[in-house]
Length: 280
Ligand code: PAF
Image (tube, rainbow, N blue to C red; front, side):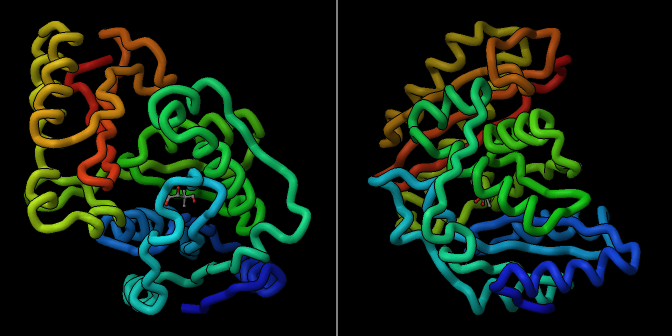
């Protein structure tokens, strides 16, 4: 696996792949890799002959009081994992390559990025949309892989790609979970032992609400119960919401719906989501 940090070298290497007629898949990440990322790499290998992974901890998607400074950075370990997973190229631009002096462009996707996490993390999805657009322009992949764990991010990226006619196929991969149901996340490492156990209340509360809603129960009651369960376990709840799985707007039982939640446990913000079974 080649590790590249400069744009010219990246373009040169990718040119070689393209000249050989090889399809390229991109897995954008912020590093601190886990089995969830490896599932994206696996899916990428089924999509294309060449797999490029990017690692860039994007300052533009963190709010001023968020965890940019302490976000886990494990360059060597990540690099070893990707090499063992058969990745062809690791794109790891320094911040001055991604955002050179004078950088002044912001990509904002309205609608899908406005509620839920968008409401609780102002500017977050602008940061994501801006860096993902840059990554797509830098790598020009045929396909790009994203996890369903960041369900709103996925919807924002699908909207961005459709609106800007970006020639890349967006492929989503189901959330990978630990044995006890907790969604894999680079941020799970922040949880102390006791909180790591409590964190499983989040997927369980979503599961209970999902079964109630899929079984025809009152959605508002199910959502309120999930919020109560989380609060009682010590979470500060940002939202537990039922939305249309595509627009993230008002849900309707004759279209796919998604149940999403975000809550903070002693300083660690966790998100999760599940489809409502039997919808659509
Ligand atoms: O999901 C992530 O890790 C990040 O939001 C992404 C898509 C790599 C953009 O920085």
